[in-house]
Image: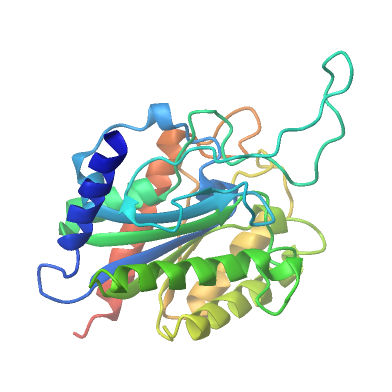
Amino acid sequence: MKRSLLQFTVFLLLATAGTTQAGGPRNLILVAGQSNAVGFDAYAAELPADSSDKDVLFWWRCGDPPPDEHDSTSARHWTHLQPQPVGNPILRDTKDGGEAGPKLARQYGNFRKPEGGFGPEMGLARELHREENQPLAIVKVAFSGTGMRTDWNPQDAGDGGACYRALVEETKAAILAAREQGIEFRLRALVWVQGESDANAQDAPEYERALSTLLAALRRDLEAPQLPALLGVNTHFGNDKNPFIPKVIEAQRAIATQDRRCAYVDTAPAETLLPTRTHFTAAGTLDVGQRFARALLALEAAAAPK
């Protein structure tokens, strides 16, 4: 009974979601990146309720690399904005006596807590709803611990490009699924929360080139040549001691300066989880989403005809 009621609710949401109040396509925003895009430490139990969530179409896939059956997903169906469950993370083997066995490479689980969590999509959508009160859809594709060279490289047909391909494939599948319900989208923006994994001696010097390559490829592959991109990273990653985070920030700022369709979003004031400050807290994650929403509105206002 509960499943049938949920399916009927989603059907009604989709049935009334085809156009905005102005009669055009519904805005679609992509949210992507690594663990702070996933919301690894943004616990679902700490998310305040908001009635506007039910009006936002939502499609997600998040986990850890590589993209696989262990990810948390919306099962390639549209639903409404909500925290995401942990999915089916690989359990580490234990030795006799219960000691942890060998650590599996880059298998972190989707969220730290069994209750699941949420990313900046929540604060983003809620802030836009407060400012605009317009229909919105979000596709979220994010994977913890992922870097440009190792996971998001559109020029790598192997594992190094697996997360990029997942972003493109999930976005196309989401658009097609909506179209089959009579819903058309306008790709409004990419929200990119990533860079911590590139804050190292090998990858930081290449970050600007790598992220520029990803943006160019995504605009091409999604046939959205003017797609705006909002760029941000946890500036406190490494407890303010990582010497390469400033290089990543510099690269994101440089892209935003060179590309009028991009904006750098400063996340420094957002609350991070002590003692390591690796991830934003639930309150910090909501704050980050709100900052991206305000940056998007400012970017669009600056581009509007005078």
